[in-house]
Length: 139
Image (cartoon, rainbow, N blue to C red):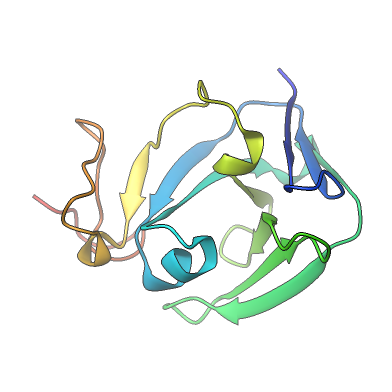
């Protein structure tokens, strides 16, 4: 199944030819700032299954673990569409909201639950890690 994500103005796109390998919800402060929302949600796809088109600008930063993340956003409307995480060199993360699909698969896990807004309720049974994906699970 092909899925297409795009920015608000439609100039920057990412098309995935497969289902995501994982969908992860992140409560970290950087994702909150990047999205302007209480969390960000990423769908991770095999790099070879994704085609991108349009001109992007890149914002690079380091994760809490010191690994590089490169965010690709539209220079016209500012929407982040995808990013390249150093910790998953064979994958591309695409912002789930950029798909604009209410039936997109739900998160398979949540990370940085220590920064979760108290009023955000997670889907039942979603594993939530205190920090990154290798950290302890919340009770």
